[in-house]
Amino acid sequence: MFLSNPALLLYAIAILLTVFRLLSKTCLIHFLKKWWRSLEDKCYVYQFYKVPKFNDNMQENQLHRKVYTYLNSLPTVEDSDFANLFSGNKSAEINIMLDKNQVVVDNFLGARVYWMNEKCEKTGLQSLILKIRKKDKRRILVPYWQHIHSVFDEIEQKQKEVRLFVNSESERQRNGRWRSVPFTHPATMETVVMDADLKTKIKSDLETFLKSKQYYHRLGRVWKRSYLLYGPSGTGKSTFIAAMAKFLSYDIYEIDLNKVENNSNLKNLLLQTSNKSLIVIEDLDQYLCEKSTAVSSSGILNFMDGISSEERIMIFTMSSKENIDQNILRPGRIDVHIHFPLCDFSAFKTLASSHLGLKDHKLFSQVEEIFQIGASLSPAEIGEIMISNRSSPSRALKTVISALQNNVASRVTRKLSGSGSGREMEELYESAKESQNGSVQPMKELKNLYGFLRKSGRRPSMDILDAGEKDNSNHGN
Ligand SMILES: Nc1ncnc2c1ncn2[C@@H]1O[C@H](COP(=O)(O)OP(=O)(O)OP(=O)(O)O)[C@@H](O)[C@H]1O
Ligand SMILES: [Mg+2]
Image (cartoon, rainbow, N blue to C red):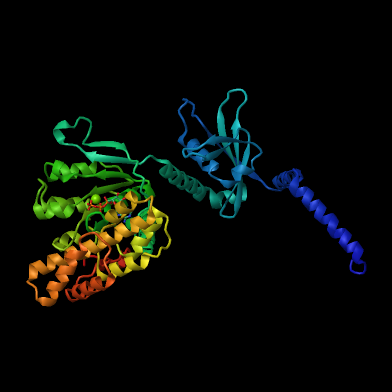
């Protein structure tokens, strides 16, 4: 009938569109949903569970706190008829909280459950009531509670204030060996300049670790992981530790080995750390090579093995791992080796973008050429030049270029003065000295130096994290 009469068809479509619009713009759709839900309710048999806020002795029921936190994290809490708004920890953050006598719907493993935030008018006592279909109960109830617990743990972990613990000298200690302050370092994984793939690999390695309790236990291994961050000064090792702590919301326990009196004190320090923490020893190579601590090498090895410390990440930093005993670097003691290199052109571009807001500039090609020659400055050095010249990006780049040129020149100077030079080398030596006067040098002279440096076989390198469990054998290189 509609097909034979197009006017009628258009008329019907218009009516449908109007009804649809009316439903979506007004609360009619809400009433229809409610009506449908109550119709559904009549067709199923439900079971109810009550989670009171307090027990008979008026002690707080921790399960209530967990479930309430969980429910307020659900997107469906926004759909309840009435919700409370609170300001969050960060500025402009608003938290939505379920109001009394409101219902929130949750879906889990294909089943729909209802939670009511009940407040008794007479006693004023609050409870959360779970309504679940009897037929779903057996299938989902146990995993559902586990799910609530783990979501709650995740939320708590994220909201936790990260603290920095440092070890104090024993005679001064009164209440334990560790002292702590809130850890407010502003570094994050996003602000650390690092090869993007490497950063992604590290983040996923950390995330995998967090979820691997059962896996480690099945293998009979202690659930912990150790990282070595090595590289020259000012390349971001300490900054990266801060970023890791933020990323994981783990506390940092930083051990100053100079303040540790003997092996057993070191062991005790580890025992007094809490789980979900980063245990850090900076500049381990210095302690090992200079033997400047009262702790012996075997004490350090036992500490690294730390059999009683679960759910911890150990981090060691070194300027180089060249002269380090392979026993210390072996997988199990150190699982992941991460090299922090001096700046290359790509790191320079990231710094220019974050520090100066520059995505590109006509001086970039010159910077790239000097990096190809083998100039090597740390991100700290380049970052500092950019910060102090941030009002003029061109001046910042020119200053970076002369600093890089000076760096190349001084390295050639050092090499030549140490090796006895022929005529050609002496010329290079002169041009190198000239280029140390701080002005931007013509690229030709620097390219000559490049030829020299290539012959001397010096290029900065970067070895990449290999976070896989299987490939740990590559790490001890
Ligand atoms: N890769 C990087 N990304 C971001 N900032 C960096 C990086 N490297 C260095 N910096 C900046 O340089 C400064 C020094 O960095 P950091 O202390 O982390 O270096 P480090 O490798 O720990 O040096 P050291 O070996 O001397 O302790 C910090 O202010 C940091 O912000
Ligand atoms: Mg450091």
